[in-house]
Amino acid sequence: MNQPQFSDNSRVMVDEVTIRSPGGSTGIQTLFSASIPEAAHDAAAREYAPRCHPGTRRNYIDEITMWGVGSKCHDRRILWMQGPAGVGKSAIAQSCAEAFGDRLGAAFFFSRPHKTNEPGHFFTSIAYQLATRYPPYRHLLDIKISEDPALVTKSIAHQFYHLLVVPLKELKESGKEISERVIIVDGLDECEGEEAQYIIVKIIANSIRDQTTPFLWVFFSRPEANLISLFGSQDIQLLCSRLELPVSRDIDHEIALFLTDKLREIQRDHKLPPSWPSGRAIEILIDLSAGLFIYAVTIVRFIGDANSLGPEEQLNTVLSLAVKHCPLFDSQHPLLELDTFYLLIMRRVPRKTLDSVLEILLLISWNQNKWNPAVIVANMLSLSATQFNTLLRPLHSVLSIGNPTLSPYQKVHVDFYHTSFLDFLCDPTRSGGFSLDQCKFNLWNRMSNKLEIYTPGECYIAHVLHILLTLWGWKRRFPFHGLLIYPAVVCCMNVCARHGSGCSLQFL
Image 1 (cartoon, rainbow, N blue to C red):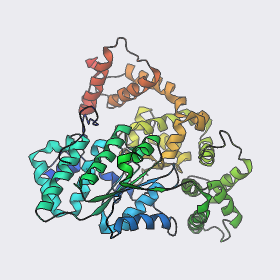
Image 2: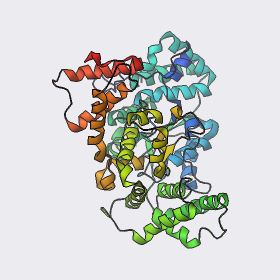
Image 3: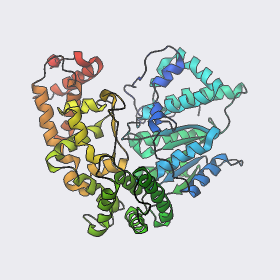
């Protein structure tokens, strides 16, 4: 790979790279500012990320780590593990990243709910992580980026070439080459844009073929059609090994181990009788989990929810599913059991507050770090901190909600624990009356009213405009007359986003 091999009409364009920490003059500081540190396996943001419970998934972890540390020459330097939502891919990826130790070069966890899905920051993040591990590479990058800070804003192909290929070649020529290391990429299907997914894999495959980088790459993703086609293409399948992680009752013994250990912890914490839960109760929970680890994990969070009437009552609620369960949708749907549990959780939201809860969930689902923390979402909907927390109280088993008592409310963030809950809410055939589509019209009217009563100096007008523009694509209309006004609104939104509370709708 002598030069980036993607023409202008096939590259992913990054219009504006978000610089997170603009201060500082060194190249490494610039690189850090253009990376997503929260996507690393050892980031503080992933301190409570899922990882495999002791004694579970050992066969997969061992196979991947043996592949990564094998002494024989690798003909297939890409490993693709694919499986449907909820089977535990991210937990395996996290556990493998920790198991590799010094053998790990970098790890990146794409995630829509956690907003680490921007393709323009992928290779900058990989380069930064490598730089923290290899001082000669760090020194070389520092010089190159200091001389040309715009390197971090280039197209994906140019980033890979200038941040990885060129410096690694120079290090090799000077006798300081980086030895073979493993790079883990989780959630490739959650990377924003199928074209970006395609380009990332093709760039890596070309580099492997041309021997311009020394890395082994492990990808984890759902078996989406575009990725099946990509990894099955003639030029990539020769470089790629595959592992499938299916939904299977063959792992019932592992789910039993997980449930038993976690429920024993709850039993001890709440000083419940040693006989709780009964063996029969655990058997029912295993059946309800139906081979999905995410179901078992969500059950444990639900039973241990501190905002409930207690673990015993919560367990009885879950067990009632085994008695009352009847298929509401297509019985062949692979996530039927999980959907049934998500419906149970959503039915705990009082009917009189459901519209407000759905509006909160919709705003969180659209969040691209524009109106999180939670205080901004609350202000968008004219909710106090108390009202906001009360509305979300029934959803603590599916939402990660920062504790206002531990940090200022302005810094509290709300995220989805798992993408499967967001997928459920976005699919009316699965969520029915709890679909996020239900609240879009009301949210449109609410934001339109905010726009009408806007006064200069309003802090959140940029967010209001962003919401309206997003909804505009749904409604296929806009509450301003004339096609020429749309670019003006876009311009106003961008100005507001840059200048914050000083923005004004006088641009219109």
